[in-house]
Image (cartoon, rainbow, N blue to C red; front, side):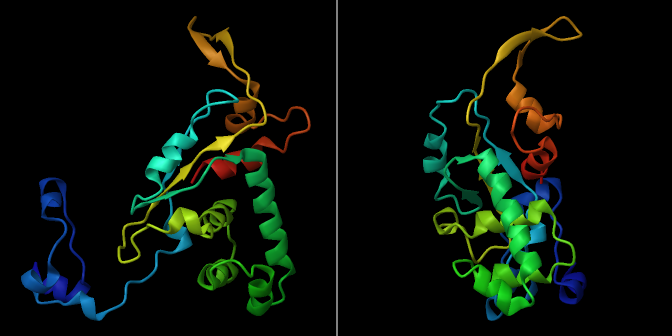
Length: 208
C-alpha cells in the first residue's frame, strides 16, 4: 500500500475499511498534506441534491433549512420559488453568452465569487445543472459553514416552492389510491400547462 500511496497519493477505503477515515497520512505514510493548499471543489463535482418536497402551499419547510444551515457538508438555502429558479438560470445563461471575455463576465456578476465566475466561463458547454450549482454557491448564507478545508463535495439542500399546489386522490392502473398534482406533473413528466415555464427546464433544475 505504501508504494502506491507514494506514487498515486490516493487510498481507497472499502466496506469496513471506512472506519479508518480520517487517515493521518503523515503518521501512516510519511506524507504531510498540510504543506499543500486544498483544491477547491469544482462545479462539475457537485452531484448530490436533497429535494425537500413541498406537500402544500403553506408548510413549515423552512424549519429544516434553519437546522441544516450550519452543516459542514451541506449547502442549505431558504425556500425559493421553482419558477424563479428556472428564470434565474436562463438569465445567467444569457449574461454569459453576452460576455466577450472573462473580464466582461466578472463585471456582469460583481457579487459572485470570481473563482466561480471564471470556472463557469471556462467550461466548454455548461449545463443547466452547472448554472444551478453556481447560483447556490454564490449565496453566502448557504455556504458560510461549509468545510473549506475538506475535499468532501457538499450536497445541495433544495426546497422549491410552487405558487400554488393542489393534490387530488386518483386511482392508478394497479388500482391503488395515489396523490396526484398537476404542478408536480410539470416537473417530473414534462407537461406544459397554463402559462408556466416548460417542464423540461424544471426537470433540469431538479436532477443533478
